[in-house]
Image (cartoon, rainbow, N blue to C red; front, side, top):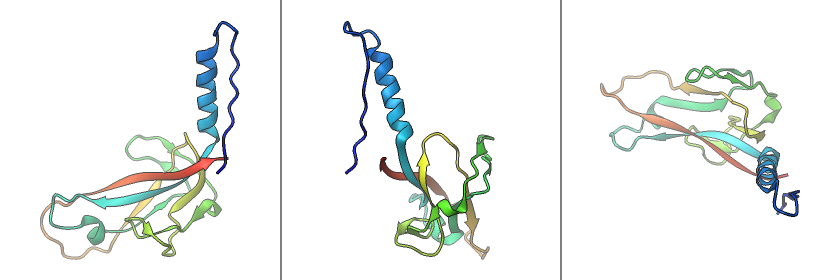
Length: 141
């Protein structure tokens, strides 16, 4: 297991302690790299699994773009930063040929994900819901 070393400087009377700790925490957070992916999950309050019925895949968009909810600009990144760690939009363990995980992401930038719907077929006439969670796994460098 790797460890992150932080050194704090302060006066002998404690002046600067608060600033040093804040700076140290920010430095540690900036050095952490995460592997980030999205996971779709169904709202269990209805009778249809909306993820299984309607979502084909969820994958990062290396071309960047604009977040439709916030209007924020998403970061462009090399497609080589993508790996296949999970299966399907529910992100079950195991590879499936879709590169859904962005490797070695630092906190801060905005990344966009594309949700691809399954081809339309006849479905029940009621509203079903699926949600997405953005998940990260990582460690200090």
